[in-house]
Length: 400
Image (tube, rainbow, N blue to C red):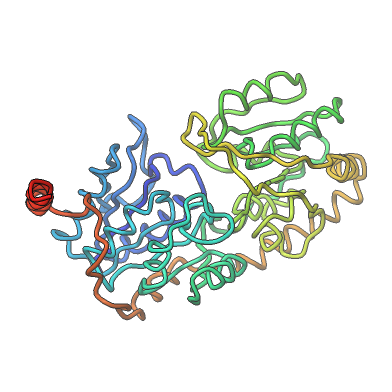
């Protein structure tokens, strides 16, 4: 098969669950002889790609040029399937994929805020939602998200969990007496307000924050004001981070698709205290310390330094979080019980994960939907057709 993946996210380094998941799948396909290409956002200078060397990656900084590159690659590469990952807030890549590869589009539904439908969507678009519904297939990495997709567009999504967690045996950290209370990607939507409040209430314990794609300069400043919070360096490997973690906090306030870091911690026997937002409960697999929160429902008409909408963060009581953290940090029995339950649930979950599941899904898939002929964007037209359209519009203005 010839597989073309497209997303607006950068793929070097793959910072975030969606990009890491997609690379796991493409790496598997490439190693089995399938031709794979990626059209994506601009990579960081000097960044290293940790995927199969045969995968051709085309990072493009300017969004309109990215759409043009996708069009050109579809025409030249003639992929059997175009995988459109949901990191496409303006839906331009989705439009172009359906325009140039009608019937061969598979939508990878990772991040609900980027979907063109649903209560969590930052940019709802009825036409783009219809394109998702017309895709030959839709893939989610959790049952909770599959149900969300079905409610939104009336399609049954395939639930395919990427084996992003590595191969056993997984390290079993015994960090009760020495690790940090840690959070990854501290920012407004991930619940930095709760994290900081816990640190303030428990000043004798050490906390660690690993900045991510959502962490702003203001977030860093808020963390630096607390002497018991260490800002941790970027970790090339997840165990560089988790080996230092005593307890993981996931106080997310936006709608989560799944929560890959939760499972990664549980596999290593690290207890996780998580909010009940979206797919985090599914990731916790019935273990304890899931705390209800008031989630973000509105965003301001303004953007932060990462071009992310500024959320209206609701007030949440930190007391249940403080109580949970204090219990796990001060009670060895409670810590050990949750550690073992977490590791057992994690090992059971990953036991049957197989990167080949996506390959088998694509091999069994048939082109779906009508040939798209309407509502093509100006950006999706060839230069010649754009010039012709502009000439017709000019003549129409002269007549009127």
